[in-house]
Image (spheres, rainbow, N blue to C red):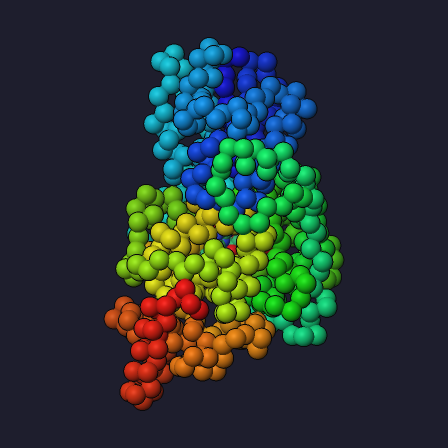
Length: 513
Ligand code: FAD
């Protein structure tokens, strides 16, 4: 071979132009690496899913006539890191050109850029051909340390790609149907929640490897992995989503319930792993969903717009924020949050029903839907002032789809306001009332959502006011948060003191909640 091409675990894009023709001189390298399995303590299903998808991808490449070197943890255990492995292979095969696709993570991008190879080897970096906004256009849309409104970015993307457009105008005359969406699930809605499509990928060999190499993980292992690990499975999941979930996607996007067997999946697509591993292309997902919307009567514009916004808007947006702001972004802590993460984030053992549901489900499935991540776990960490490094690590560890470029702006930015408003225009801080409005958790909870103080009071209530109170200088002048301060000021002083002192007690004993 004269060329070695590296395919990272989240670069499983079979449509990449690399694979348009076979070449006897090219060797593809796909490798299970200790450095990737351990840069945080991942959920065991996440490691299994990546390895299973990498194996299946390598197999498909070989079937298509390409030369592939698939290395397991057994094969790579004696290499310190990725550069050591690549350098060794270059030497062994007398490689002249080493090519790689630009990593989506700053960490890997730096590692590959700084890699020292034998002198005769030239190194080339190519695009992953995955994202819709070309990498070199990120600086045109995003500036370091400057807020870019998602809504305007999204409109630009709609125009640029002609998605749901009628000439220069948005289809249906509105860009955004959020107001029509966001309903609570009523009791009578529960029976209709679709049965999720799950796979049953046998990953016993992978689990054995993970154990053999003492890779420390969290969460419940699954011998039969429910996540899609091939493009064919991902397409089935996309099709299932379009038929069964898309008709109600927007409407119940923010809803949560503890009373349905399918509470963990609801109307969500669960396509994030397939997208982030690049088994699916974002435009393929958008076009398939729009084709379904056009072909049937059961999906209205508000539902499809809500879905397109997530992928054409949010997903591309957070990637832009990430690259425009790294590496400084990883150290941002605008609210000086310092507390350690309570233990129940790792065990699910808490009396707060909303948190117990979100954490236990995450440990079981490596998944929680957006509003659980944003308004349950994220909101709790924000209110309690948990150190953003700890919060980031938790999200990066636990979710099947967690890769830093998408995890960090969502966590540090959107939920923790640690970037001082680069992503969110106001902190996503909420008391128990929000959880009660969007879920049925509170009526079955140990705590009482109506009370602010006392042993039985929902901890989110006092923590919410403590948060608002301690950050008054920062948020009182923000028109989007002015209202709560007016309500706070209307409370009598004794009541306010009681709330703050109750919250202080809670903050001193977070592990006991
Ligand atoms: P659906 O609800 O079906 O949405 C469809 C798709 O839209 C998703 O698959 C995803 O690709 C995209 N999307 C939706 N919201 C976002 C968003 N805010 N940012 C980026 N893409 C979005 N998403 C990840 O892919 N990886 C992460 O590590 C991650 N960490 C998060 C951490 C926090 C604190 C929060 C609040 C959100 C995070 N998200 C992350 C975004 C979002 O919650 C997940 O993409 C979504 O829950 C995945 O489930 P789904 O595929 O069923 O999504």
